[in-house]
Image (cartoon, rainbow, N blue to C red; front, side, top):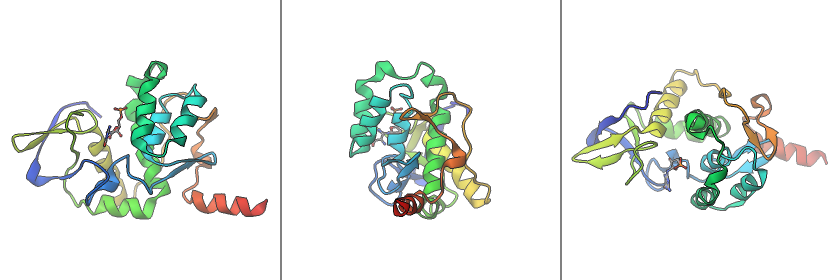
Length: 201
Ligand SMILES: Nc1nc(O)c(N)c(N[C@@H]2O[C@H](COP(=O)(O)O)[C@@H](O)[C@H]2O)n1
């Protein structure tokens, strides 16, 4: 994705700011869209994104995963920002796209319903200051790169055309708690498979 700044007329787009409101489920902070990797539950796509900053620091990832709220998980990550993977600025967009793909893959029915409910409108993460993941409001327009909104629109189009599939980004060290993420072992119905496995023992 090019990092060009976009302008969206406020009356002609769908926005979300927090997890509240009609489109709050689009936020990475939205609860009820858990992600399971290698039997580890990440409560939100935000927690996964923040954890992937620190692939070589499983102790920091563990604390991020334990945080009850995604905002506090993000704040905890900020406290350890010096230990962020060195190539973060080069890989974070690919990682974000992967996080929301996984959110969709493992919560397909409910998340695709919200995505499709946005119709053909541009989707914008409205922010007071973040012009990279979202866009700020100025004179009737949302202005910013709106990278998250653009990834969500991309995903919406794949759902519409039934072309959605989970793809692993070409990023090294995609690890959670010392284990590389293997998308072939990522289940689309993880809660069921974890329950089934629990029953076996
Ligand atoms: N602090 C905060 N509160 C919210 O309600 C937000 N939606 C966000 N934005 C999200 O933060 C993530 C990016 O984190 P970095 O700044 O790159 O560490 C991303 O999910 C944004 O959508 N922030």
